[in-house]
Image (cartoon, rainbow over all chains, first blue to last red):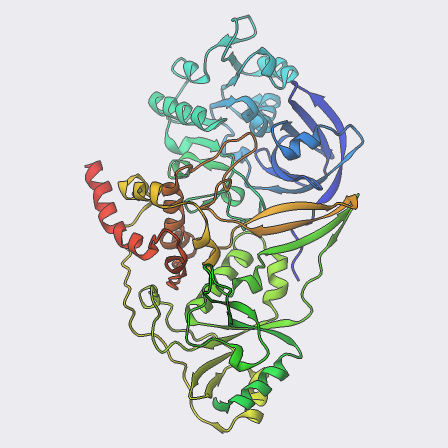
Length: 264
Length: 339
């Protein structure tokens, strides 16, 4: 008899880090292996399950950055440090750090799209000798929507960071405009070997990839991460299927050579 | 080896089987049709052979035996979770060749695509299949073109004529039971469909590019997104998780999965209101291409088994087989747009 994959386990909330009014990071007790870009099915009995990507990984914990936008996440926001949540996972392929080692790396992230890729940014922020030049372009709606403020301080010391807001006034900390505005001016040593990760809302990903291709990036050097309704995370429920790919099994991280073939 | 049984003998066989198995077969629900004064043939439990409808196609498939419409996965009480019990008895399912081919698709989805689904596995291990021979095709059937008209992997087969039942048996378990109730033994091979009036042709060069064709726009207005085509399909497997709690005690409840349909609103909705494929034509394209293109890219053979139930059930008279036959010109349209 095979293992029952649907039964969740209980995990304690070790800490709650508040970023904005509607975006908190819940630090969950977790001891297994997990990669950035993977996701957990978080469940609150009575309200259901929601797929949430891993935004941080450490000894004995996995961070889940959750935006309060639906039935399940509303309930999660009622919980405090010391409370427990049901989890299943981690699911999905996640980012493979090996693909980016020793290379020039550009990360373009929009809004909560920073969460799945945060683990990759952290890894290379701490290990600048394992990569060449690195640039992070992160976009948020406004000053109030910025996530991981403290991290940005640390990242700035270790890589080129362009933090940009859709609205507001330009300051020394951030610029104004969409992330795509900054792609033409990226300083690159060799566009033929540079790799890029793009994560965010569908339109932002589409136009960012377009910008990168126009700069001369090779399709096989671009990775994207897709967000879909993953009910089961096990390749069964069908909701996340696009073409011949299941976002929960084959993704959510796709090389652009595959990602470009996916038509919803 | 084959056996010929009379009605009494066959009923005795079913009676003995029912000790260890629930027997599911297409049966007639008088007045159970979708319009007043119409009947419905669908799957249900049977005890006697004459309850089984041999001369009509069932409107729904057998799949609800393996994947119930609603299935409780587990119960929760505060911090504990208890898995729902599985069925105690096994199941014997009477089904036609197209449906037996559909079982392979369900197996691949639930046992191979990602981790094994233990709820499916626990019932699947206890199921035996009885192939009902088809001497001719029904309306909208196109099994021959899909290569699903012949099946070999049955436990028993059954063909009915003049109140005699001709049974082939491949399962060692059932041989002595059949022998004891047969009037004679002889070679039996189940009837199969050799020709259908509906034909389909899936173009060799079919690719996901066909998504940009204008053929899908017809379905934007014709389709009403009711999802009946998915629910009658023996190969559709999608489901949605659903939590419910008991009104007497809000801390106790259960998680279920219920059949879902890629044609129905809400299927792709993500938290915050985002959704994909809002147009019905795009949903039609998603479904059709899963059945005759991208499932094959993943598994090496087509998902559709050609039972034609989707054509039978559609309240808007949309024909899936007609849509398949438009794909060739759609591919021509797409490639001429490119050049």
